[in-house]
Length: 485
Image (cartoon, rainbow, N blue to C red; front, side, top):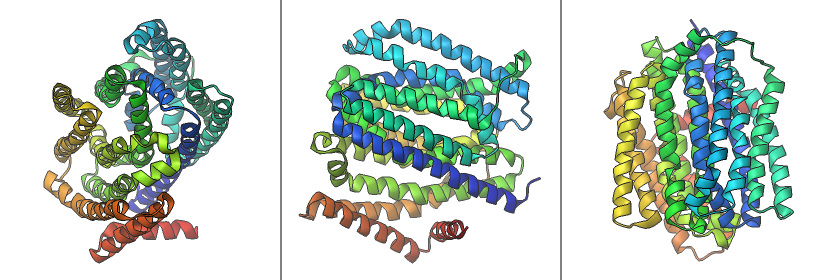
């Protein structure tokens, strides 16, 4: 059995490297996104937004829950990896063929002729991604996020350079297509170079059956979640203009850079760590509680703060033509602040092998979201109504996720909510004051942004010290110890 100190040290190191990976990766992609937003038109992003749902669903089917099943398994063999690898690859070719032949129908649905050729080229990322799934799983099981960080940064730098170059040469929407293909290709190529895992010429049906038994429910859960997560691109693309979809797409991407960085870091690091202590109830409870509190302490002020400073931030980064995205972004941040908490609570269900409860929770949440979306459409509340439905659903979903995870741990719904409350209240007070300052300060956008940032950070740190929030001390100690090393 691993010692507590050893596990904590390994987890901390993995979290830091994983967060560094996502921050560096997203940071580079964010810079590229800002440059492209300056060069391209909102309509170009809208066209890509129409296709994202099909790519996301395909990738979810290709994975089929095998990633989580493999990470959870403590005795995975080369034959297991090879079996899943061949399944992933075969599914990717099947799905590419389906999208290739369906491209004309999709183009007619959105009334966008360019989609035919774009879909046929962009869908190649599905095949490229399938080649990298096992490579990532192996590195994640080792908690080797240092290697993943190097790969992500290198791939992002190369793809970003290529993308900006072709955008400046006047490739328009094709710049975004080239960006996605180049990024995925470089990540896959570098994973094979650094990890050097290659499949054996074996396919074990019993191995497939064993992992698919657990992964199939996660597949259905993930598929439902992916469809609903990307449904807005379909609805907005069909019912509204490409211009409005472009505004929404950019707002979502910008929000995800912040919210998904922490959510993805916590999810992909804590899942293998929690899986390794799944049978030690007391350690599992304590680790889970610390992760929940720290995630809230970091993510709540980050997303609320971004919503508060969105107006000057968008004007400085993207320019005046993107200002209609601001209101979308602010609402999306209110939903995104809960994403890490969703991920952590759902991780417990997977760690405990409760894929049936995982699926049930997803079905309940999606029924709620469907009712909210239908209500918004019937009342003709427009895009704002649709986004408000997503915000409301995010908060309802948190209660549902906590309810199910509480059944697996001695950590009740009320106890978890009490642990989240201090960070939520302090962040809300800070965000309200920072947002108000933005309204009443008659300064240029840059001066206003700097002033809001200084006030916001000072207030949050100050209130955390006054109310003796433990996570501030823990975070400070962590940063200092790593800085000294």
